[in-house]
Image (cartoon, rainbow, N blue to C red; front, side, top):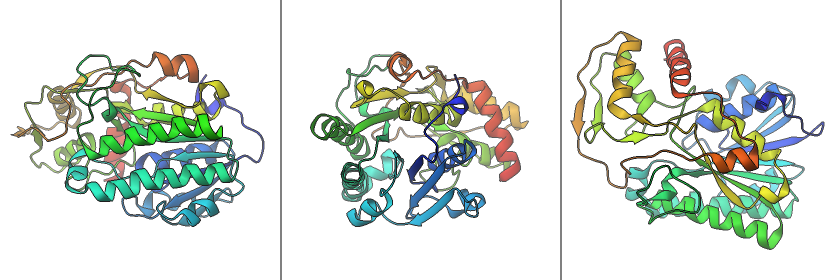
Length: 324
């Protein structure tokens, strides 16, 4: 069953933090289209108002500009909310190495504020963004929950701490929490700009503009690139999951494995471009290979991703052609 067939109680209220970001704005759109009420919170530090502009006048959407680092704001926005989708965070491994204190404030304190506010206001389910980076230096593939190594960056550490708080809030306070370990999500509305932009939108924009792309390392690193529709499905199915599946983290991916240099060639062909990439040094904190075992999410969340890489990349290219 796809997520569009899921049913929640009438007049259910969903809160999406980080609603103006890539994943958050896509979740807002999906939930509104299903007919439910959505409240969005964002301080617009990394998200963009343009991502939610089309929903602002919708009767089922309310946007609140605010910061998850402020507990009073978190308590206010969770009042009367049934389900929280906590996507607000600062991403990027390299940036976290430069700004560890800021990542502590936003990703750890901010997430703890949201969990505490959700507990106080009797939220039914709290689904939050984690990351495949929690696997750190654990070398085995595929990556499987319960088999993690040493984290390699402050960003990864913040997500590991989030998961521990998620476990404790289930065990101590009976707040149903679900950690979504995203594996290299891509798709519509993902920002191609800036030094810390994700690789797929960055490559697409550079190729479209006939600009050279830089590949960090030799291009033979592999990732389990995951199209945004799969992530929407995972979040909404977590809201629908039984209570006994709460307090855990789940790999959210397609379960495939793509090499960076092959993706670049695929994008060249799709965009009918020919640009030799520039090879730069490996990035600190990056892992070489990533591929997910998604059997736990299949079993406990009934997660059944429909979008493989080839289908997703075609949809992403079409979106960027129309919107860049």
